Image 1 (cartoon, rainbow, N blue to C red):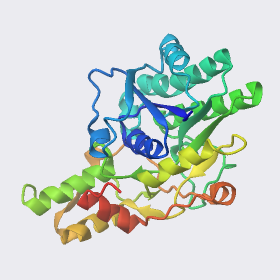
Image 2: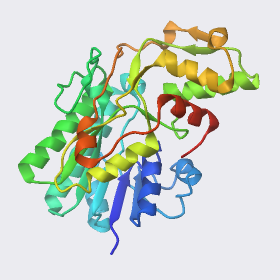
Image 3: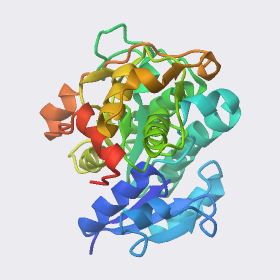
Image 4: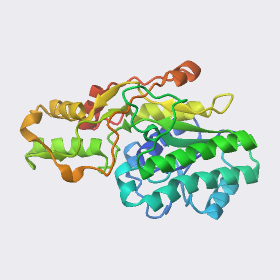
Length: 318
């Protein structure tokens, strides 16, 4: 019999790409959102995966909802990609952020412990947990220094997973994901805001692009590659946490420049720095060292930052 995967948060960028990959790998794929009847399946549709999945309603922060889903589906693998995904939004909705990420993760772990099933769990972590790395690449042993409600929630979820793995022997692990992009990114993310803003200027619908702090540095990767790492982590002999990143750090200013280059426009003509977009706190420099996952699982990011921007501008999904 084929494996069955439950993807919580299947309608998001990562969920859609992961669903397509697992379908191509012969999985039965069940996806969940808080309300299956009204969920936005446009990303799945764009990838041609919407007709081949089973979609259910599941609220990760509701224990009974998680228990019902896992009991009925009996998945071999669970990918918890649900919960708030925006650092900026977490400052506006910190309670919802903590509940959707930390409480949701805890419910999945508790249900797996209660059912005592051989299900393997992947939990989506975040490199935001490290805080500002001071130009020194973070790895799996680097201490967390979260500087946003989102990062605090992700840090909490990380330690919950580690505790259940050690205390109860559950096959569960966290992929500490660095920033990863694609044309499926929502417009609230700064990378997609940049791409859409440059396209608008190119069409003549706008004459400027307003952004906040441009002097921040991030490790940006290509989302379709990152979901392969998620899948590989659950195929390993033993559960282990890994940092999923490209190892290349690029400034937001350079990301913007590359977007204007893709459009054949001069960045200095249209770019405006606007203090109203600044966050209460922001990470200036975030660098990652993904050498462990390369050594253990053979996974390495292949797509460069320039190619990522070009693909996003041209809306290439693969």
